[in-house]
Length: 346
Image (cartoon, one colour):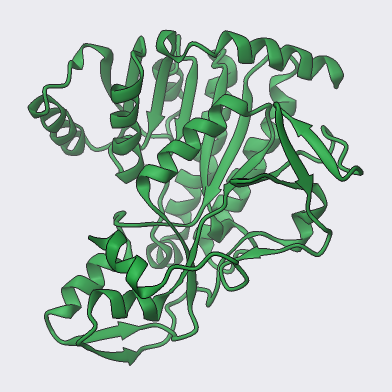
């Protein structure tokens, strides 16, 4: 196992110069994918940035939008395909150094009514990503996860938990000198498609805001912070970790008050598959979790010794959490007030 990490460090040095690398983003026409591409274009001079998604219209709109901003499209490749299609992925991954896997079926209610479709994309698609990455000698893969993957009660969360397990275990498949895989897990993204904000803004016009439950809390992160966190995790990953940013919580009722302070609120009950609160680190994972100033890292149990108080991890000093630790939206120490939410929404 020690040889594995020696080689991983060698790969890390080879990947320090991001400008020379080719990066592919699955689901690149989604909220995260578009912002991550913009981040790369602004901060790096990658050899190739490959937009991999299944919707030709969204790719066309993305291309036209970037062109209108004066972006040089020479470095971009627009690749139509579905993560369910292994052969297409294998073609797309040719000579790619890094893969950011953001493609998924994410709508909780839709997944409850279309379970097989969700499984095909989120689980079978993850397997295809892993196999194609190993077969094409991709250096690093980071898969995006969700707080709903922890102690899941809905199908979407269950498929993402399964996906997380696949990506962590994939490091054993790739061997000491192969692809390294890690996961980034965070909460609700402000303004993303499917976010509650557009719903509240729409209902604001009617003067009545539907609230699922006044007790409901959620983790909250901006898309810019999400992109930066993925990029930072990419630089320090060894393989098999789940990276979790420290982000604030907010109450759904406070969000409604921030958006529509003069409206009435009606409690309508939680939807199928919803939780009152969300968790990103459960007590079951506490024994292998390290806390840093800005993040938690759930380490692969077999790869790191966690029976010491402080651990040196990629030149970052972290501290092992206690075995009863839980990182959940209702127990979070960092909270967004109504005033802070108003500023973030603007």
